[in-house]
Length: 255
Ligand SMILES: O=C(CO)COP(=O)(O)O
Image (tube, helix red, strand yellow):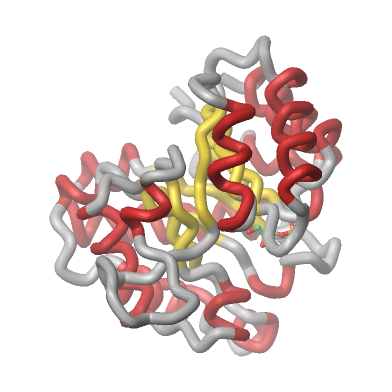
């Protein structure tokens, strides 16, 4: 049986508050018939509270795109897990490749953030993935394993029950180049095997592993039909309610 599919939209640095509320409302209306698929939308920090007003207690969950690991203090410009939680969000994306590439995030900082998120009742969506150079050098598995071991160092199996992993090959993000379903499935299977080794078969079996990288209505079905692909982390296609809800409806039919 397929695990529950989780479709998350990473809005990245898009949408003013009024635009964000409009998009969230359109997504809410277009997904009213969805009962099985878990939907998460991740607007920028500034729009979290206003978007929560729109989605309220609907089945749509709210997530942030990043956070800092400290509780509070003199960290100008940073946002804590508790602050995110207070907006109504219950998810947070951690270690996105854009954060790693442009903002110096490392496996170590990802690990600190994952721990702080869990301590504050936020479910982390932890991103891993190789660059094109790494794929061509045949070190995809090595890179992804290092990222997984680093991100989840010192965590218990109990804590891992709250975690989602997103495999996002860097070369497929925003490029229109998707990993083929077979390429993605292979890495997902390897990630699941590694999680089983680290945390036992229950975690390995139940872990939701999303695929991200140019997911759109045209390729969603072939990706989501793979046995180890349990959802999608959608960038560009989540900025339009039509394409995002189309992906969600494709997921709904597969369960
Ligand atoms: O980075 C992504 C989601 O986190 C994927 O972005 P695109 O869907 O635009 O390739």
